[in-house]
Length: 263
Image 1: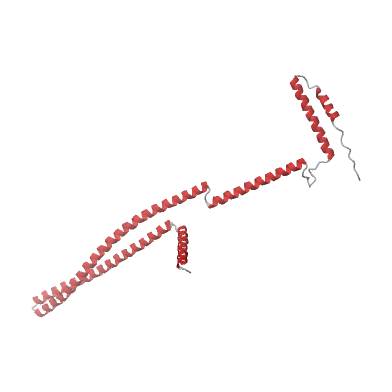
Image 2 (image 1 turned 180 degrees about the vertical axis):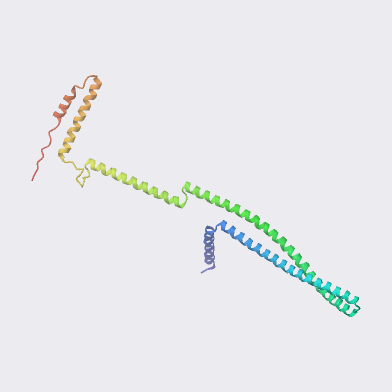
């Protein structure tokens, strides 16, 4: 497999993966995760400040004890001199001198820890301010995103471009087409049955030849009666010709066909 094909496959895979990640990514979850990480960092800084403060306090206690011991040696030296014991006074002052070097080292360490504590405290305060600002911005962005998402869904629902509404629209269209097709088929069958081109297989709506002839005669009489009434209205007279029309209709009516019933 050539390098060109491998590069194309890699590009396609990365593009597919990137598209899938875009669909799966929720900005609100990303913001919440970032805020959580900032809180964890702030907690670490606070723990660092607490550790430095604890160390400073411990040095402070040691320094206080050494200073008290140094003062005690000094008092002992004075007391020894007052009693004429110069040797004891010298020993007390020698011990005080040894303690003084330790006190000096502790004071140096104490000052360094105090400066470190102040620096970490200031960093913690600045980080706290940034975290608070990020939290406010995060909530604003989340609210805006949620509102935009709701507006998009509402717009998609009204416009019918969403997947759910599209399926509903297709179902409605199929139902309307099916209904129209069934109505057209029913109308066509009714017309065929009425014209006699299609026999009623059930026999319920089928008419024999006698009934058909009677209906034809009755229909012709009705026409003659209506014609006589209209003539009377036009001439302003009474429809005296109605009986004659009826009689004519009866006289003109051809005799019913002879039906031979064969056994």
